[in-house]
Length: 333
Image (cartoon, rainbow, N blue to C red; front, top):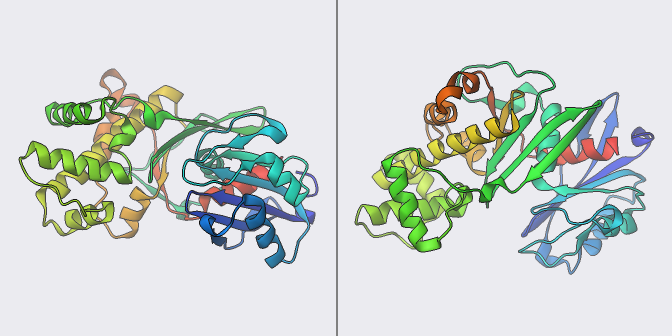
């Protein structure tokens, strides 16, 4: 973006509970993102009020580019582009971003599109390989998957010197069984929910749902107060067989869905894992995220086993990676 090094890049990651605003700068081809300011969305009646507060507290810097993301698909184009959020009453539109900041072409995107755009800018130290090292094929598509509140999926493709993030709603695709145990879980969940998507088990709420299904299949009661972090802690301590199986099935199913993504987009540029769950498990110490289980299911695709075995998989460890992706988008607008 011409002039990006003469002003600040404003980036915003808007969630249902919290909104993170930050300023970034581009110098000599490198982008630095300042620590974000975090506001509770419930404390502000609208995006423009929160954004105005942030700019006032930042001293009203000159803004050279703007990019924002939120969970959900982007509808409309140009100034009419908007994201309808389920758990936040804010009107998240490109028009609002332009009105408050004065930016002519603010970028509005899905949160996983922003995370995908961060991938080329990540350092090796900000990534953790899953399984033996593999070499990505330069210029080939990249896949992104991440379990958190939901299951986000996106891809990144390259053409004409551009990086193009392709968001999707793959988390709502059908969940497939790889063995009889998984088939029994899906049958149980189908009786309860009808459609069983990948997100139904590969998310924070999904961990609780999966634990409950396994408990029911084992003829045991489920603790109604059990949380995703509680399940993970039980599995880490090895004090609950159902929690341990829940985490093991989660790792395997995540690998299977990631393998499907790699096949679908031809992700010879690599698969990256974001979201809150897997990076959080790694931050809590070794042993909870089973790389072997993930990798085995990732590659278990019959005649394409060898093809998938060559694809690198990494976990994104950088906490503000989505803000980096937004800053890269704002710089290049």
